[in-house]
Figure (cartoon, rainbow, N blue to C red):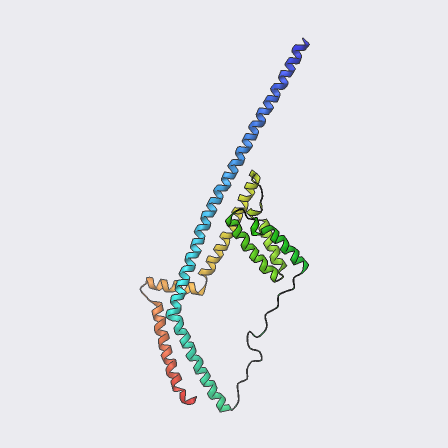
Length: 269
């Protein structure tokens, strides 16, 4: 009787143990499946952000290219005429001043200090704190620690910034470089799911910052005087008007007037 009870109790324990092991295995599988789903969702978000980054970068590059082309064209057709007119007006002003000085028999008093004569501030002395901080940055971001070419280029860029900050004794900039690195995806070590998850999150945050910077760059480009002038020229062209040609014609008339005026002043010189 006692033997049967012992065997029954043993069988019950084995059954409970088996059930616990089963539920434990199932729970582990469910947890792993959830981690995989989370990582896939993050990878999907990252792919979307990378596509947006590529699109916005291309847009900024397109606007810069269009603006550069307009500036070159504007300088060739309008800017050079402006420079010619400025030289004529300067020559007229000098001729008038020369005549005035002859009449009053006195020279023109110059400025006590010409613009730009003050020396540039000397670089700050490098303190021990700056040296220690620079060593910390170098240990963290040195290109020799890179695992691939992209990471090597990234580290190389940071080292150039760190060297520049060190040469100037700029402790704050070195600290910012180190803090930015510590928040970067590259600073996360390991291949386990949590490390992968953290790298993905940091990369997504990094791209979000880049998108904000690109938005700011695009807004600044489109708020520049050159872009506004280009927009006016393009709008007028859509209506059949050539604003650049009108500017050129007006400048040529002004140059002709200034040339005649300077010629008329020649006896005064």
